[in-house]
Length: 123
Image (cartoon, rainbow, N blue to C red; front, side, top):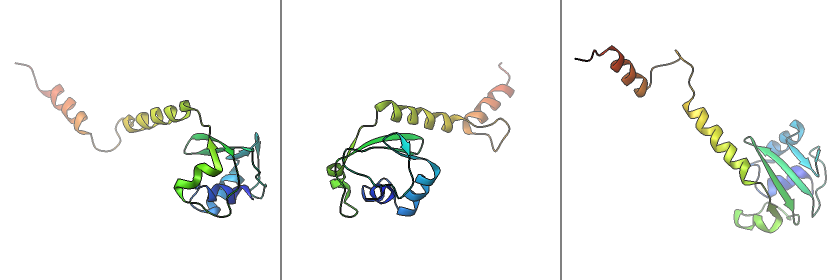
């Protein structure tokens, strides 16, 4: 089975065209090598998928005949992604939420309170 079709079948990508684009960008590796979308995938292959800034590491158990339900995905792949990959994503999410360049946009509620507290003179 083609690697783009396989990743679509096991629900890592919503469409085959998105999976194909990821292969062309070099986000998919099979046994440590970047692959084209037409590369065949066999049982015991190690597939690495870079998606949403996380490197998912998968081991192929078997190839499905067609797209499978979410409950049946574990039959065809084993997810060996380390926990550190997800922890790094959480930290990145928190840093993006907090970060805002000075002087851009309206002040937040916290900024407003700080401004009011700065101008109020203590009595």
